[in-house]
Amino acid sequence: MTAKGGFLNESDICKKFMNYKNDNVAQSWLNTLGYNPEKIENLLATQIPVRINHDKAIALGICENKYNESIKFKKADIQIQIEIIIDNIVHIENISLKKANKTAGFNQVDKRPVLTYQKIWNFSDNIAKWLQLFTGDILPEEILSSSELKNIKDKRRLFLTEIPTDKLEMIIDFFNSNKMLIVSDILRGRGGLSAEWFLVTRKSDDNSVDWVLKDINSVCNFYAQGEVKLSPRGSLKIGRITMQRKGGTPDPTSLQFKINPLELFEIV
Image 1 (spheres, rainbow, N blue to C red):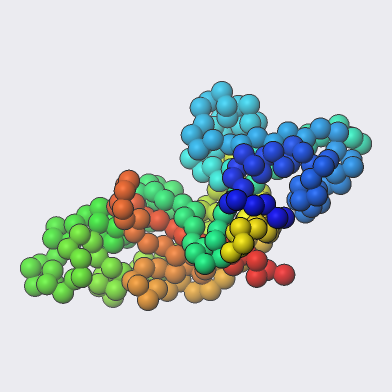
Image 2 (cartoon, helix red, strand yellow):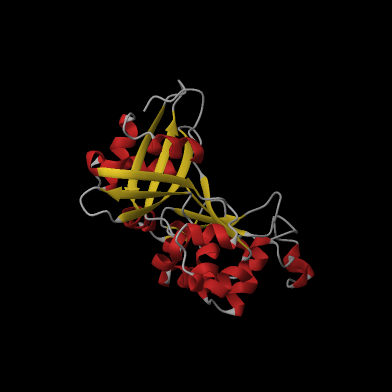
């Protein structure tokens, strides 16, 4: 793919899929998805908005009783509906899109308040408290003594390296024991708008763009590889995923998960 002038966004990707009969790249994508372009009767590519109302969700094929789960755990950015000539069945493929520079590839994949993650993953109130201290949702001065406060770098939050060892081990044990669930939730999602595929476009110095398209199981397994351990900057590494405080605006005290999507180009 030799797109010029910047990244392809969701709208551009949908246009390429819709023009698959004349677009070699879109044909390659369809082959990767498991379809022969010559056997396709009709194809509809839809950009999934960040916020989805009820009627739009139903139009995307979301069951009424699954609506709330699908919206809460949505990871797909576009949906491809493919009708095959030989059986007239409409096949639906949900794709998550990521864009990355060759020099700066980190990309946020999930961000929520600590207490929201507690409801999703059911960790203890004790773990929630120390994670809230990590994000600054609870200020250190509310928990620590005056002598303890003198030893922390930032009075607005604790780095994980500043959390008592037994509490830190408790956090690490939880994420280690639940690693695959956590990786799946932040990359695949759940429900009718979960991602089945992961498409990364990579911009080169000459503004050309290449790509990699992988099934979501391979992607989850890849990013889950490695230990759950402290990062050099006092955040948490969960395999190839970094968990850190969001910072900045908006919602600076949320918990944030980041990946480097460029690493997917390493998968053979």
